[in-house]
Image 1 (cartoon, rainbow, N blue to C red):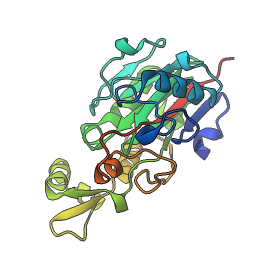
Image 2 (image 1 turned 180 degrees about the vertical axis):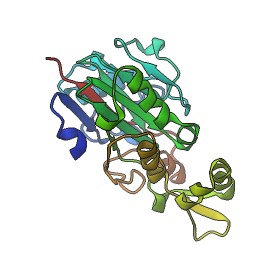
Image 3 (image 1 turned 45 degrees about the vertical axis):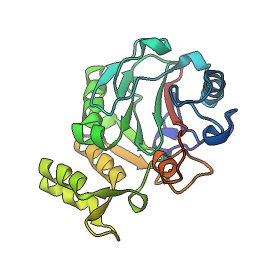
Image 4 (image 1 turned 90 degrees about the vertical axis):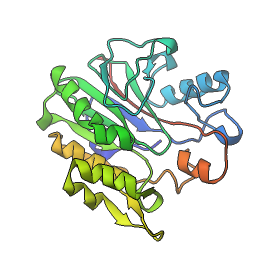
Length: 256
């Protein structure tokens, strides 16, 4: 499990960006696949979630996830919900101790946030669509409505696909630049004419700073490159795999 120094230093908070190791799943899902709908056996996913929760000192029923759709939708979580009750969203916030917000990813950027002085945490799933739509800013704003303050909010960017591994077409670059000319700096030409290498992680980091987050940590880990520790949608696609597992990132406020 990977921990970010910015969040690790906060009292009353537990978090972790979990790797793919230590689970029960096999084959393409080996081994800590936590993604419902991934094609893995549900009994394996439930067992893996139980193991993941143990890493932050909780039971599996304390983990809350959403049906991620690459949007800017953010929901407040008052209590854990059942799998079929999951709202369609990509961000969550809560002020309930003992409830773990869980983000599933396999190249997209998992973002964990906290203002422990206000007792508010947040988590976001930022793929390029959600990041461009404003999922980061929307999550910070939702935290503020629960009482968090920007100047006290810290965040961490977890393992995700990094610029050296993320080749995209000119149409994606054009889409980002059409929103802001400054966005051209997140793209550099690739070895393939007309394509670009996209720095999604830095785009997300800059979005956090622009939203007023006072301190941002970045694990700087590339999910595509490390097949032993992380699932990667793009790597799986390049290898011709039919399915892929999901990494989980967790954050929770400790109970008093």
